[in-house]
Image 1: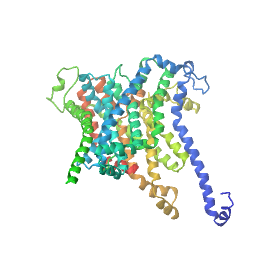
Image 2: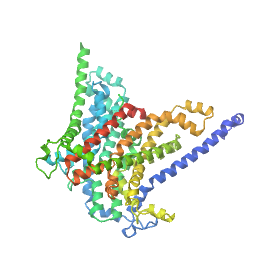
Image 3: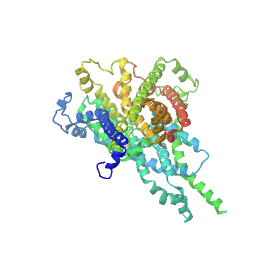
Image 4: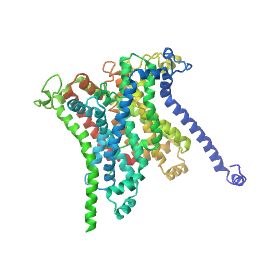
Length: 290
Length: 298
């Protein structure tokens, strides 16, 4: 605005300039409000983080000045927490990979071919996304007891398919919808089969979507508490269940509980950062309009 | 001739791509759903051998539920919890979305920050609010005391336990409404807003007559999504109140959990779960009718 070229204009039409200036001021005010509100919204998380660095003797003190320590984190190592963390990692990764392998071709088929039952399949996927976990837990509990899958990581991988598979089919379909068909058709003309063209042409173009979907699956599985609470005991116990056990059996060691919470939330935060723009779409997965 | 074989081959290839997913999805969802309905028709419990095959009074669990005052109470509590939390989330999310509705790189960063509460593992959310609601270690009570408000423990008082849970749930999920409404607002064409401004519409009129009608489809779907998810709230209740004090926070989902896994009334728990699935199914039909994802993201 201060350059010589724009100066005469400022004289010629003063009103919009003033309006722009007030708008500029308004923008700053909104930015400030946004930052302040965000800080307020994140305070509860920050409180947990500071608790995890507090020395045990100081945990009940609400004052903000203390000598930070990593003791609470080291204590997790001896409490068997790493094994639970590993179980979480295995179950989440396993279920993610499996649901991508099964779900991605299905999503592509639904995106490219008008099956007569498209509408019904979409509704089915929506209901799966919406169904209360307890409805799956009771039959799975009975079946797992019978099949010997109780308290195993494989069992968790299976039950996580209930939400992951539906999510993969739904979000990947929308990514494939966005890839133009003409490229595959060109590959077909060159003699490629349907799945050859898919692997060589379409999938590479949808790679960012594939990564985002995989990360979403991982987060959803990682965040599960209910299924793991009921379907695991000790061998396959996941990190969220281990935290609750700290609460119930280890007395109220708040520092250790807070440290475990931070360890569990960290991977989710890192992944969220990578998929932030896709996340909202993923969480809405299952909304239907065919 | 070749066109026909090609389209037949295509059809075969796509069916082949779809089939494994449908089979697995059926195995992990339809199968268990059928099993759930079947067990709901029996008095199944591990304490009585053979109870899983006893279909002599198939609807006994359902008629028992209607006469079970704890179950009826849990349904009312569920309605109360859902109403408070969905109402609060909608108000807070919508209000903030209107306030923060400008496009800039800075605002994008702020919006990413608001994702945090809803992507946190629910168990971590539960721990955070357990800490906040435990007098002695909670900064919340420290602040209230400093302000001269003598608040007792909110979650051990039957009158405040459920609203306290609703507040925690609102904190976790208001970003969902916020982000969805923001996305809808930013897709709004500029012309109607300009026209209304030229006609001298005030801020409130702009919202009520111009913005709200535009975002209404998205808002409706968001509210329904949150309504359905509010029925499934579990970790917060499990960690913070465990259904108590008394039965003050024993909502239907939690009641089904207790009946099934604490008392081993598997048949009865299945019947409650079946009724929950039916309720969710009806709500899902409404979501589908209203246009789902497309109304919001496209």
